[in-house]
Image (cartoon, rainbow, N blue to C red; front, side, top):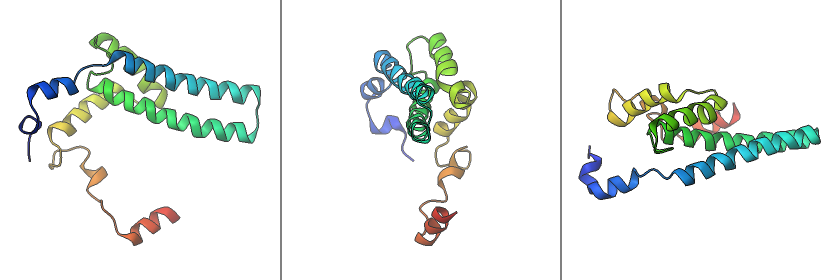
Length: 141
C-alpha cells in the first residue's frame, strides 16, 4: 500500500495539516448556535413538530461535533495543543458522549495500520460492499 509521502509532496502535506482555527471556531459556534436555538425553540413552543425539528437539526449538529472531534484528535482543531484538547474534550466530545483522548489513541492506530489486520476500524468497513438482498434486510429491520 502506498504511503501518503509517496503520493504528495511535503509542502502539500503541510498545507493539508495546517490548522485553520477561525474556520474551526466558526464551525463550533455554528453547531452550538443551532443546538441551543433548537432547544430554545422547543422550550418556547413545546409541541411534537418543534421536538421533531429539534431532533433532526440537533442530530445533524452532533455529526458536526463528531467531525470537529476528528480534527481535535489530529491536533488540528486549534493551534495550541492545550486548548485543542480542552475545547475538543469539553465542547466537542463530551456533549456527544465521547472522549477525544481515547478516540485519538484508537484513531491514530487506524491511520498507522489502515486496511491491515491491526486496523481497529477494519470491522466497520470490511463487510462492504453488500448485496442488494442484504441492504433490503438492513432497511427492513
